[in-house]
Amino acid sequence: MKIEIWSDIMCPFCYIGKRQLETALAEFPNEEFEIEWKSFQLDPTISPEPGKDVYTYLAERKGMSVEQSKEIHKGVAERAKSVGLDYHFDKAVISNSFTAHRIIQLAKTKKLGGEMEEIFFKAYFTDGKDLNDGPTLLELAEKAGLDKAETLKVLENENLFLSDVHTDIMEAQQFGVQGVPFFAFDRKYAVSGAQPVETFVETIKELLK
Image 1 (cartoon, helix red, strand yellow):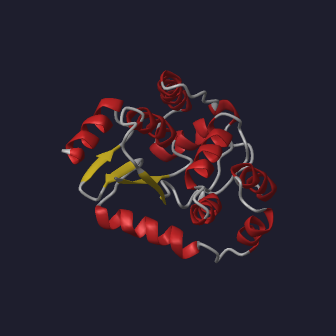
Image 2 (cartoon, one colour):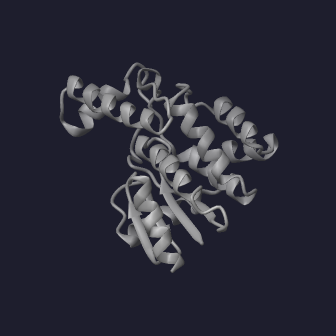
Image 3 (cartoon, helix red, strand yellow):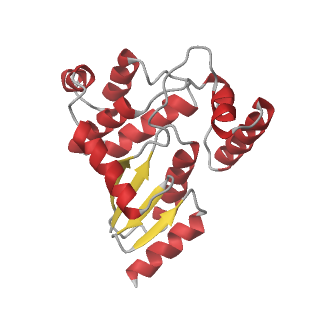
């Protein structure tokens, strides 16, 4: 069974959804699953602004107060904790994820897409790493098992894997994807959002009938 996942590493629900799916897949030890990560950007216009935290960013984007934004982030962090994830929004550095997505596309050619996604998610939401920073991206890519020289080429040449990222995003638009995470199961069933484990389990069972 092939599962395609449209995701943005800046999206807290995508990391939660990843854990929910992994828990569901563990209930099918005798089945083979092919996971393909697809690029998506919730805010392609985002640009790093030194000193601006995620609370202020969301408040400005959604037209709410910083206090409301903090309450929302607190709720998301609690939900993340319920699936074993440790979010530290106080440390998060606002980043444009496009370059990271190009590195994920490189990782996919080495069958390391899942590893790269996991490392980027943890780096952003837990460790407060700056994913705008080239040396940081290089270090994280090496941690996932990517070759340093190949990763450097991607960082130095903005055209490398550019079309791959755009293709994923356009494909999502064709499917009518409004937000992520978005999971497509054999292109027959779809699950939108970080749904409960049971939703993924039932979807897989339907396909296995």
